[in-house]
Length: 248
Image 1 (cartoon, rainbow, N blue to C red):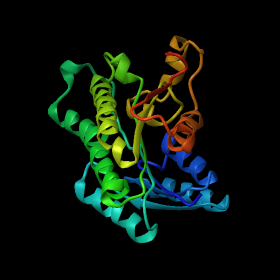
Image 2: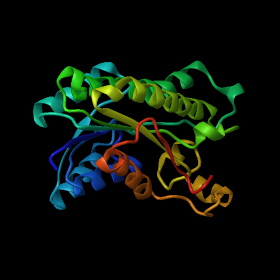
Image 3: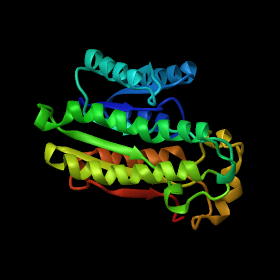
């Protein structure tokens, strides 16, 4: 396999696990990150040490000019794009809706929703057979919060991920005839540092008793689901929303 994969938000958590697993499967991997260059460089170095090929680009997916520059890097250094994982996401501290201001909502939706739209737009322009591309696959990282609502914690994040579910369904139908499959994974409570952004680093251990499997998930478990959706083994799957949530 000599396919090129872009993983947004690939310096940590699910994104980093996906990048490493994809490189081990033969993909040439590009990851984007916002601020933590050291973490991104560590992911790239670990892939190189394992015999893979990877690069990292600083890009805020909520900024259209950054997205354009990110994809230009892929064009110029990788020679094409075959797959996209829209993983970049963020949440803010636990808060009921009555306390949320417009600035918070704009930040949450700009990264989680608008960023995914912008990156998918650029990917479709390159992968669509109608545009001369070879087809490809997109996996959007949603969340079980889209089903659960995250009351009293981050309804805004849950609503943004609900938008990602709808986006996945609509785009899948829009580009199915152009050789592009579009699916989503919906992780449940996973051991990543995103929970610290919500003000509770230990959240997984607090809520894991509500998970039927009685444990939190690992980033690698989500990454394996993502890689399956990208692979030819999922060749007849598009518009799927795959829960990786321990039954929750």
